[in-house]
Amino acid sequence: DSTNFIFKTANAERMRIQNDGIVSFTGDIELNGSGTRQIRFDDGDESEGAIVFDEITDGFIFKVGGTSGSGKIDALKIDNSGYTHITERLIHSGDTDTFLRFTDNQINFSAGNVTPLVLASSNQALFAEGSASDPSISFSGDDDTGIYNGGVGAITFMNNGNRSLELQS
Image (cartoon, rainbow, N blue to C red; front, side):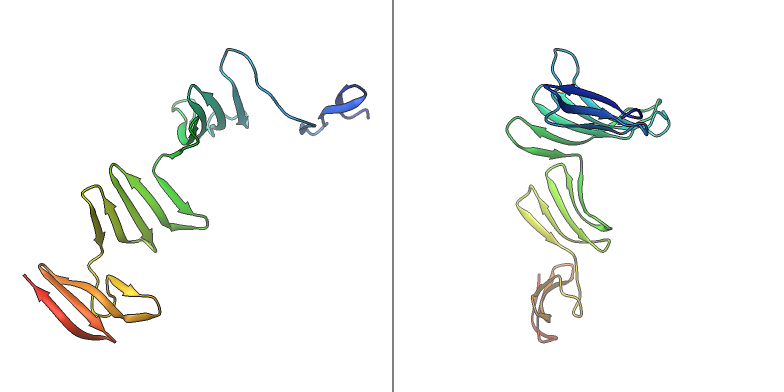
């Protein structure tokens, strides 16, 4: 094959570099040595950055972005214990306003640019304020029955769209 560069061992093809620059491998790819071991995807344009898979002392890290003037962002880390670390958010693909956001000692659950639930390290589950027509806590299949914060120091219980109990401090 005159347009391809082919490596063989034991008369079997192991690697092929095609004329269009595509490289294909048969079998495993192993990076070994005492220096930095990276798999790097880069288009050669310094302004666009690159994607890097990098071995670190206690695991593996996936970095993205960066330019000649700025470093790459640690997007995902898998440590040797099997734990996965993310920088800040898990976003629903194709629906960027639906996500889990992790901040110091807090998890925000967001959908449709609204954060109806926040779990905080102060042993609190914080619910959005809500209203009679849109309770903070409602029950599946029964949207007009639920609980909402009717204002400072007030909690209102709704049953079939009607106030059944209101507690005020």
